[in-house]
Amino acid sequence: MNFLAHAYLSFHHPDILVGNMISDFVKGKKKFDYCGPIQKGIQLHRSIDEFTDTHATTKKAMSVFHSAYRLYSAAFVDVTFDHFLANDETIFNEQSLNEFSWFVYKTLNNYASSLPENFLVMLPYMETNNWLFNYRLHYGMERSYGGIVRRAAYLTESDTAYKIFNAHYNFLRECYEDFFPQLLQYAKNEFDKLLHTV
Image (cartoon, rainbow, N blue to C red; front, side):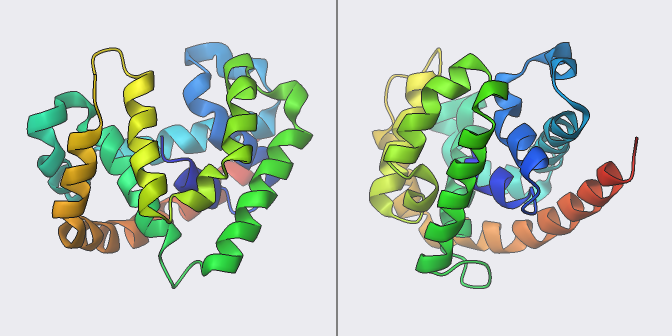
């Protein structure tokens, strides 16, 4: 779950941020239970995921995880790209990433009454362990890969993913550097369209 990318690609809009962050916890037509602006955030998240999952560079990055993790390789790439976003000096430095992380947690807590129950249960762990900032660190990545395995029905270990991450670090960084500017432009266009639809 690439929470950092979805938070960043909400462009500091609180309602969009909430929808973008909770989308994986809101299945199908359940999105209509939310107010219009949060629905737009959910839609933005789904558009971002579709763009990401079908992009040639994402598929190239997935190839290094595929033999070990098959269908779950996309999830490992998502989290890996959050690591490179957290370390992208054109976007964040250590201080601004930390400040952005706490802005996200504060915003989510302000909307606590609107959050799905399973997201609300997870939020204190996200905040206490500062997940968004810790994507920056190798230690944080090791834990994030473990989180994918805990949520997955058919995975039993994440050590292999962490070894792949380290062994192919430069290749994966190059994939991020090719992909993310395209995603950023796409997400900004989708964000602008959503804001101007009723």
